[in-house]
Image (cartoon, rainbow, N blue to C red; front, side):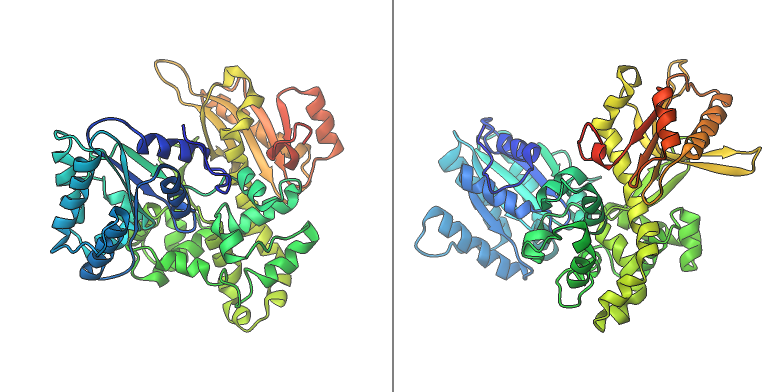
Length: 496
């Protein structure tokens, strides 16, 4: 295995997968698809791969089919050492030449070929996937060392390459989505893991997008928690910063999005807590059936995710996956004119409550679920297994209310075995948690038990960004079913 360069942060699994694909010794042509939203470091990763294993790299641009073809020929000439650019009559000839190059010169050894920003080419040359499919099929029989990686940031376009009746359906031997860093890895990347309170706030605004630190902010990182407010005013909230309009650009860059005003309204609805289909429709003044398409597009673009209610079949809520977009819709968009006028400090001074309720609070809940998917599952012991981690609502008909469970671990029933709940948890960002929070979870547990759910091994967890009352700590010491999880533990400290 070829070692990952030191300048590439993280991405260990992605690197190993790419190296394995690029060095595969099979005699047939191989196809891989790499996608992910912009700013994730896909190009950086692929250039590092080409630098380590060799091969041909071509980065497409927004250009016509003819201009792109000339650029492709020039890049091939440089790669092959030709004295003049390679001239092609059409993209058909270019694709045949590319696969033929691997067959003639490298049939006995892998030849890595990377075509980056492939979605630009598909827009200019719609028949390109069909041309590649033809050559891939041909070189499943004939010998070829080509290892072709198609990479792009338009998620709807890249996802469609291998979906349904698309030409490349079933042809790819690898499909990789380069995702944002997880909250722990992001804190390490920004150098703030030793300050979890700062790390949560930073992640709630910028998430795990690598490009924001070095390319957008030139390593301008808040030094301490007290520096967070002035840092935010001079970066994300400043019209002089490239991050100021980034949330708008992220939406506009998606190929399937035409009416950006409608899509911003849908995202604003979710950011303001209207996270059901009916709630979104009511917020923007449309019928629920009228927003099916924008919701589907936003899901395909990985900007929205629909999370199923783990307790109620058929019920779900929507969540914005890109923290910067959520921050923009909740904090920036309502005060856009003032921010453009340079009033960042004044706007931010009046946004504390909104930031806590609509940004940091929901983000902290999602972080707690991420924790339970990872290391947190160890708290439940081996009997819990690896159940579904999510959130949900437990109806309390007697009290005519509903109990929101922010974090739950559930094993669905099957084969005569009852559904079981291994853990139910409540997550509070800005509140010191007390015994009342545990009592709510006890009530929810009893209601589930009355409905035939196995809760015999159910733990009750309190996740807090602020702390726990002495009474709650005493109860946790006496009751092994009560778990307390603070910021230190979320970020890997055994004493957190």
